[in-house]
Image (cartoon, rainbow, N blue to C red; front, side, top):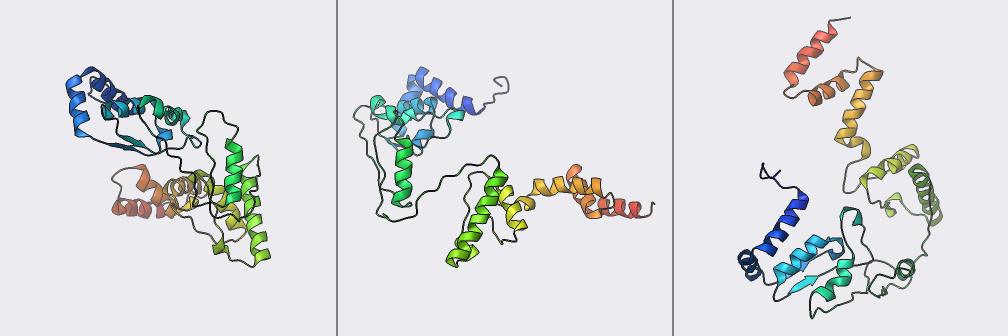
Length: 255
């Protein structure tokens, strides 16, 4: 990679840090250029990023970082929530502001969150609160398979809809990864429940899924011209409508 003058993601962080540490002239130029640093989602930064920010911010140490040591989920890629805890130790004179008021959730949800995280010993002491005091209690359920989860959630929607005389548009299913939408969609289709996927395509409308299904259709039915057309367009670059038309025409003349 050095021979090709190329950098991967780690190099794009580590190389500037090494340059700042070893080259005083470059370090001073960069420090004079930026008077203030603002860092969001600080709990998702790794150690190299934290050290890089501290070097750039010297000597003023004008760093404003927003983060929550209770919600770090990227440790698998090097994120270190302790950067939030160590902020005041590394930057002299740093002040900590606790933003404990929540504007989205009701108090029962916040009470559950507070109780869950209270067992952690490595965190800033805080307790979330809200003006929205009234709300349903939190229900916790666990499932061995995603399909079981989807079936029960759709069943719960049907039950609550009927009990409270609601519409399907009054419900929303939240999930973190697109991959899990397939399980919900299959159950919703089976139960004939109308739905929309917000922020993405329906599972069976995604290009890679349509491509894969086209191969399966050809295996099951070699005479499926529509599937062949899709496969040929994806399989070989430069195959256009004219070439496909000729191939289809030739195929129809053969037994």
